[in-house]
Amino acid sequence: MRIVLVGPPGAGKGTQATRLAGKLSIPHISTGDLFRANISRQTELGKLAKVSMDAGNLVPDELTIEMAKDRMQQPDAEDGFLLDGFPRNVSQAEALDELLTTEAIKLDAVLDLEVPGGEVIKRIAGRRICRSRSAHVFHVSYSPPKKQGVCDVCGGELYQRDDDSEETVRKRLEVYHTQTEPIIEYYKTQGLAVTISSLGPVDEVTRRALEALEREDDGE
Image (cartoon, rainbow, N blue to C red; front, side):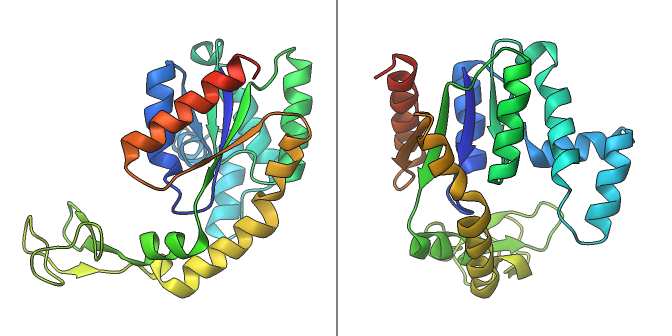
């Protein structure tokens, strides 16, 4: 299957992408991994991307698209792939359509992980990270430490990352709603988008996703 995974920050895309790709035996292709791989290998695309990232800017669409094109043409992606973080806007979605048409292949489904904004803020703003090298992760509501502010594992200090603050999360949500969310409607017009709730246990969300993808694959 060829799948695009969409959802706001805090929806659990990374977790579900890894699980779904494993169960479907297809590669998980994330933009973060693409950027890191190209920068690490010092490819021309990686060098250009690094310039943008070092300046605090988003990697330009044309670079992201070229990296994704190169990755999707690798042998392990011949029978399918799961895209995570790409496309991130309608322009990229249109470019992906053009690319796939050129390669005479098509997407099977666009899986939209839905989660209320209040839950997103609660999930992300509640995270606490240990300052030690191991960087153990806790959550003030879902997996609190036995002693407030202290890591259960090593006794290190727990802290909240700057990009996990409520103010920052709200800004990230705003960016998602204005830039990325419109691709859901774009794919709905093609009959590809399917929305599932990402609330509840991880296993339950994975089960919902697999059932939704199976229905799409069967043409329901």
